[in-house]
Amino acid sequence: MQRIRNCDYAPTKENVDLTLSEVDAAIDCICEDTAANPDENINPRMIKKAGTGFRIALLRLFQLCLSQGKFPDKLKEDHKNPIPKPDKDNYNLTKSYRPITLGALIGKIMERMSNGRLLWKSEVDCLFDPLQDAYRKIHMCTNTVLRLVQSVHDAWNANKIV
Image (cartoon, rainbow, N blue to C red):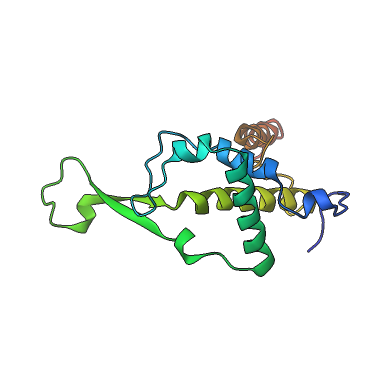
């Protein structure tokens, strides 16, 4: 893959191993009012209020999962709740319901940490197109709209068809 812009990246201990600050950041993103997975019996408030010992235990679990390349099946499980759609004639049909998935909270924390790592790695290795603004930190979709509007104005000024 050809790199579009120059990026300097040197692997260090800080960006290879998971850190407690990553666990803390992932836990801080949890909304306390989020519905808990009934199969898990863990409330989001419990995780948010848990002390450093619990967070260190989570960090060790996540490091073990990464080092062995395995993720416990229990953390992949989710619970689906069908929510009836309003104003449907027949509630005996599956299309009359909207499924809500309640995933394992511990699994969501690890997923958020992994996603953060993947996004970071994609940025430092210049894997994103420089014109991609969606789903990237510090980039805004409004930039894409402004580029589009500018190209339309440039075409009009050059008497070209847009």
